[in-house]
Amino acid sequence: MGNKMDKCRPKHDEPLKLLIQGSSSAGKTTIMYRLKTGEVVETFHTTDSTCECIYHGSKQIALWDVGGRDSSRIFYRFHYFNTDALVFVIDSSERLLFSEVKEDLELTMSEKELKKCPFVILANKQDVPGAMTMDEIAEKLDLQNMKAAKGKKWAIFPTSALTGEGFSEALDWITDRKWENDHEESKQGNGKSKQFSKTDADIAFFKKAVLRMRSILLD
Ligand SMILES: Nc1nc2c(ncn2[C@@H]2O[C@H](COP(=O)(O)OP(=O)(O)OP(=O)(O)O)[C@@H](O)[C@H]2O)c(=O)[nH]1
Ligand SMILES: [Mg+2]
Image (tube, rainbow, N blue to C red; front, side):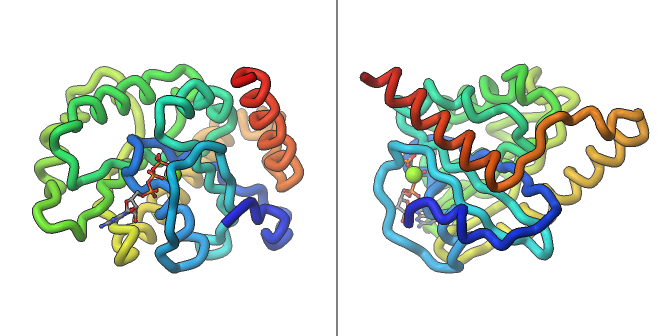
């Protein structure tokens, strides 16, 4: 594990920044390393945010795993800036805590900084016998009628970090939305309005700043 950003292949194209959020033990870290290595790795509760770079086709993607425990939550907002898509991971085998998950999703969708950010909801752990189906999850989330989701681009994908099901489709959806957003911005003449690029150096600098902030706040 560890931070392997320096191993990212150099490309001129700036990487997409994906933030992986969701309840504790939903599978965020397992997903990140599955996407990075193609394998299932042993994980521990995430306490420090971690970034890993992957390629989806020719597109470089920076995945930020910010942890799901209460102690990590106060730091979420530090990560929102310049996020291209929020990946919200749900544990499909956990019915009891679903109302909290829905509330968490709603709060995250309401964040001002994420106003234009597409949301990809991963209904993870689909391999677990008796896991909630997509219909059940869609019905329970009721995103069509969720105020915070109005006008937002979102999609739900069934996934399993154990089998690898669903991630390719989810990443396709994200890269398509990115293309769409860039196209819309350039049509509106805002194409050059982005003042910040997300090179590997920017990501490394941002990560250091977040870790520094975390140590100051936890001291
Ligand atoms: N069956 C099954 N187990 C999974 C899947 N994804 C993750 N797990 C397991 O769920 C447990 C928690 O996974 P993590 O990736 O550590 O969860 P997390 O969301 O990063 O948890 P925090 O860091 O505490 O927020 C581990 O035992 C994983 O092996 C999945 O798709 N299917
Ligand atoms: Mg984790």
